[in-house]
Image 1 (cartoon, rainbow, N blue to C red):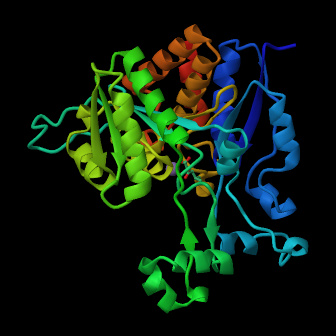
Image 2 (tube, rainbow, N blue to C red; image 1 turned 45 degrees about the vertical axis):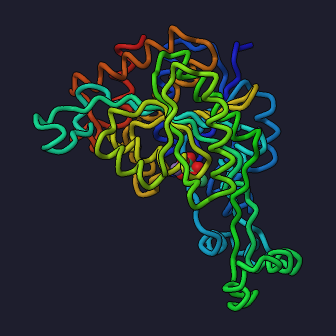
Length: 383
Ligand code: IPM
Ligand code: MN
């Protein structure tokens, strides 16, 4: 029996392409693992009415962790259109299987590192004033995103149930919506807990402490989202007291999008609730070459699912032309979590070397190499 059982979830779109690259590298590095295939993604929604079939949930429970490629998510109306005729009009509701996985397995912490690897032609170069030489700006950021709460909790209504509507209307601030009429109002909630806020902030501080990072920035908007943002800010401030050597600073989500664009090298660890973490992690990815370079790990207490931050890019599916680097760095995060430290270090060093040498590049980096060409080049240095 293999040492690890890694749930293999290519998903759809380019998920299969990048997972192929990951597998080539993991096999070449001699990871002692088996990879049970698990069905997940758009085709299962269309054919079965469930993008995350029960058999997958069951299979995952028997694995060490999961590796995930990419998945297409579409808004409700479009999703219903694509169901097979037998399932149309049966009241099925589409949900994002990755969001569901995070919740089902309590994968409360999403870690998203973004690093500018030297030699990446897509690295952020700043502007003429802050960066007169136009050279690469060295960026090394890690986003800690709360992964199960906030506006991803799935508590949403349209139309509002009578009871919810009546309860809300007891608040005078509801007047404008009351005037618009029950049937014209939709509601999505942002619910956070003290436990959730404390846990994500603590992990961000602990990570900073363990890796010698000097700054942890909370990304929120407590001046408007007074209750949820306020709770998060209080938890952050309380924890900060236990880390006197770390600069704990706070920024509003809008302001930090501007500041990070101006001075990205100044930021190190960023911590945020679910939606703001989602937003800021795409910005971080953009600064280091785009989503082709952004890995992530959904971590629970005993289980984790690793996935690149990028989506499924359906138009490129099966062409093996997309950049597998985000996926390979995701595999590196998985190796770290498995405590295969040596393999993780070797894999990251190999990726860094391939980027620096610049001989084998996918189209986004200005090259002509395929997904698998990049994987093979990484294998040359990693094994
Ligand atoms: C991500 C993605 C997902 C999210 C989508 C696909 C539901 O954007 O992992 O960042 O919003 O969390
Ligand atoms: Mn996202």
